[in-house]
Each structure stands twice: as structure tokens, then as C-alpha cells.
Length: 109
Image 1: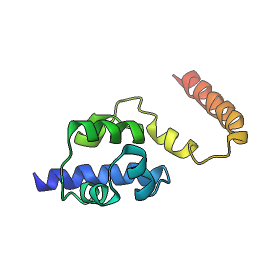
Image 2: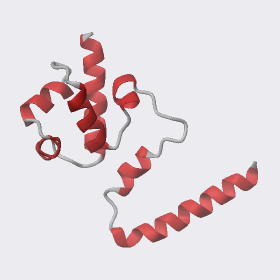
Image 3: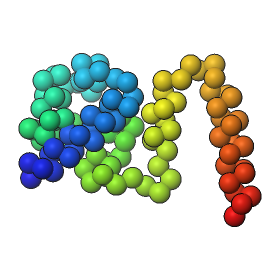
């Protein structure tokens, strides 16, 4: 069980770090103390389903990913993590590049 809590905590921290959000900022966003979030991320404490829901919502991650490490086939959360730190002025250009790439890949099929 302890190893499971450690794996869950690592996935939470990886997602949070990927979004560039500090532990203090994230704990405030979801309404728990930074100490409790640290205990969850270190695998020392479990959490209620309500806290899990808040964590999933705050990280834009599925509970399946947080609990089991499984992502859906077309999970785009990694892209969302990357784009969250991009200057909004560049997003239309990035969208066009992605559209072109998808079109090119679909033509190869």
C-alpha cells in the first residue's frame, strides 16, 4: 500500500511540476495545506475522494492516471501542460503547426 501511495504522489508532483505550479500555489488552489500536499506527494498520506477530485480538476488529469498511471489513447494532457506556459500570442501559430502535422500524418495512412 505504501508503494501505491508513493506512486500516486509521484504522479501528482510530476503533473504539478509540469504545469509550473508551486506546492504552495497548488495547495491554495485546491483548498488543502501545503504540508498535507507534501505528505500526499511523498506517499506518506492518502486522501479522501473529495481531495482526489480537487487534485484531478486542478491538474486537468484523470483519476485513472493519478491512481493507476494509465492515460487514455488520445490523452492530450501533456500538450496542455506544455501549452500552459506559452505566451498566448503564440498559440494561434502553434495551433496551425499542429494542424499541419496532423494532416501530414493522416495522409501517410
